[in-house]
Image (cartoon, rainbow, N blue to C red):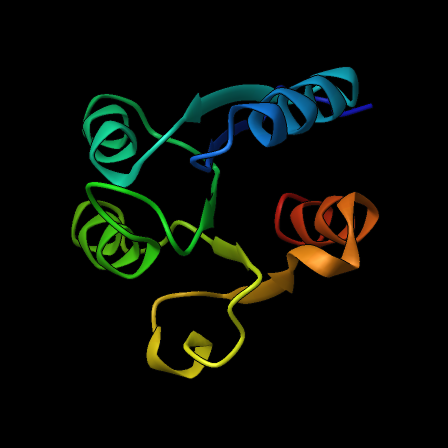
Amino acid sequence: MVDKKKKIIIVDDCAKILEAYKYIFTSKGYDITTATNGVEALNLIKKQKYDILVTDLKMPKMDGFELTDKTKQIDEDIPIILISSYTDSIKNCPNINLYVPKSQGLESLIRAVEKFIK
């Protein structure tokens, strides 16, 4: 369990994935906020400080690239984990701290989050 509830914002346009992530990370003691697109996430990030951002790449309204750029303008120290099935575009995203392919599954994402939230 986590000593002090760390705040994580998770962004993905798939509601079922968000539900699963929220359930798992909440059960591990994290304070989870979810958003279904970059615009929604950015509005939340402007109002609340988060300890980490986990975002998908391909989303409607605002993709992960634009979200990471705008997030770093608000909070340059926030760690960002990009989750995606699209590996070819990752090298074009300088603002991410770590990339976790969706194909690696939830355990890889959990380890990645725990690496940055110590």
